[in-house]
Length: 103
Image (cartoon, rainbow, N blue to C red; front, side, top):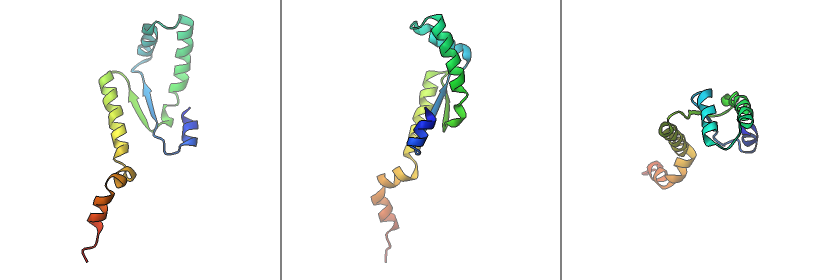
């Protein structure tokens, strides 16, 4: 998934969200009450395979305490807004004024 997105949109920012532990992931899947044990076992195997690709992403967030994970996601989004290109667009008039020669 992430590789294809990066190929199609090289400027895309990618975030990998990990559970705090394998046990927590399994408990979350079971607590949903949507899948039987066989499906949960398959999803756990798939998750381990997917998690091995965490290093292909730009950011890593551990979803242990929901509010902390959410705060980290917000920080990542805000950091993107502070990059040079968005800032230049937002502050074009100011930059032009600051850089204008007083001649």
